[in-house]
Structures are given as structure tokens and as C-alpha cells.
Length: 196
Image (cartoon, rainbow, N blue to C red):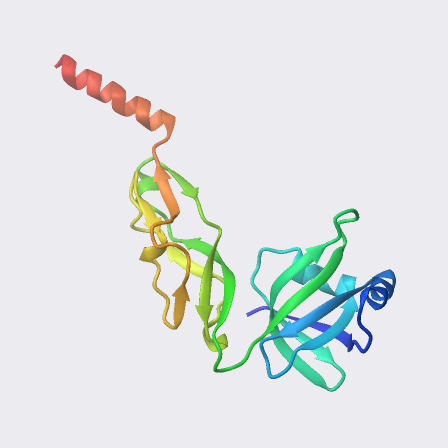
């Protein structure tokens, strides 16, 4: 699991004036929820670059003085005008407490439908899950080996031990569709069969 370390400072002053001051110093105000206490801190905006601007699921180790918090990114706000990062909410990972996160899907294998001339269409990029921290993974591998032409793999087809998927079970993750060329070949074959 990819882990990013962020070093920050605990916040002692709150309110709009204090927050504006933090942002003017190119710092981002942040909050950590979910643990024994709510922790307010700030850290340099550039420290979040690899955490925020990626589709990858990562753990953030936030160092505040002598304490380190293992967290996942929960929510973030951007400035409407400048598009700069304005605020981040983190959820602390607590061993015996389930956490709700979004984990990217990784399609693995080679579909029999694609081998037959179809085209693979990825319909869902990530799954929403609930799990204990020990069951969190970097990505959810979905095997497409048995995916046939004109067939779907749906959310309900994915089973992961210790992980509850919260997306609607009928949503397709990937499908193999017929290409135009394959449709034309089939139509020609049908016409030829009728002529005989």
C-alpha cells in the first residue's frame, strides 16, 4: 500500500482570519476525524500534491510533532476562483473501526470476448467500500478472463474477503461490446446463409 508522509503543525487559532492567514502562507487547513479526538492542523499545499492529484488509493501518515496519524483522504475543497486547495478532511484509521473509502478498480486478464473480436469497455473506475483498515487494498482486481462478447461484469460479481462493497450490485464494471466490423461480418454471414 502506497503511503505518503505529510508533516504539519497543530493549529491553535481558528476562525476566518486565522484560516486566511494560513492560506496566505501557502498552507492548507486540515482536520482529522474518526479517532479518539478531532485534530486540527495545517501543512504546506505542495505536500498534498501526490495525494490529491491522483486516482490512486493511498494512506497518509500525518506527522504532527511527536505524534503520527494514519489516515485516508475523506474530502477536500478548492478555492472557487483560484482552484487552489482550500481545505482537507482526513479520516483516521482505527484498527477495530470500519472506514468508508473509494478504491480504484484494476481489470486483469484477457477477455474471451475481446479475443473473439469484441471491444472491452470499462464502465466503472472505482468501488465504494467499507472495511477495517487491515483489509484496505491499493486497488481491487477484477478478473475479466471469462468475460464474453455482449456480456458484463457487475458489482455483484466482485467478492473480497473482509470488504463490503456499497455500490449498487447491478452496476456494470466492464463489458465486451461488438465492434462495427464484427457486426458487419455477422450480418454478411447471415445474408450468405440465407442465400444458400
